[in-house]
Length: 192
Image 1 (cartoon, rainbow, N blue to C red):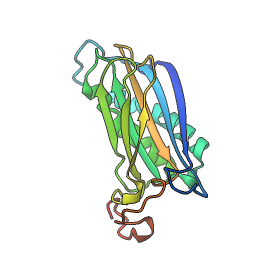
Image 2 (cartoon, rainbow, N blue to C red):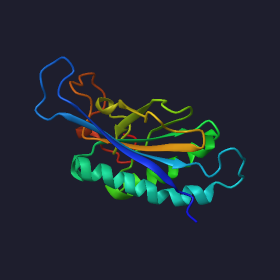
Image 3 (cartoon, helix red, strand yellow):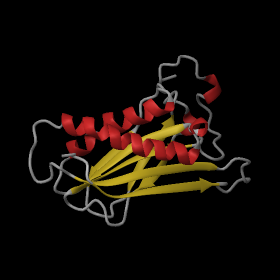
Image 4 (cartoon, helix red, strand yellow):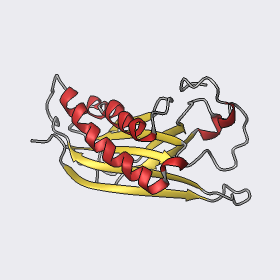
């Protein structure tokens, strides 16, 4: 029997045209694909979470593909992942998403080198989580430091987990604070 039982999914798309300055030629799109699943370990301690983490790769692939289909693979410049664990679970139940969600995005995007940032929490239904994003090829590209809010009004219930992946089409609108630019990335190690 599968460890993944989905109750609901959501797809949220934010489109930003300006931040008080001139309207951009190309608006910024940030999208979050979420899945709310039953937590198979809620209310008990399980010493081995590796089977759960391995099986979650399939969910990660589904969510990552939905974001790629929504934004266009060649347009994606930022990414991230998040988990909100219901109160009968533990932080480690959300941490399984680091490998599963990150692996899925990297695999479908052609193995970008930058670490996939993340945010996670144990919380009640309706909790909102700010998820950091950054450039997929080098995590120090300052123009691409941004965030997106994820959450679903009735999730996660106490025995559930909300898993999310976030992707976007660019850096902050009107970014003008210097630092490493996309064009200056040269080491190709995911850092600089």
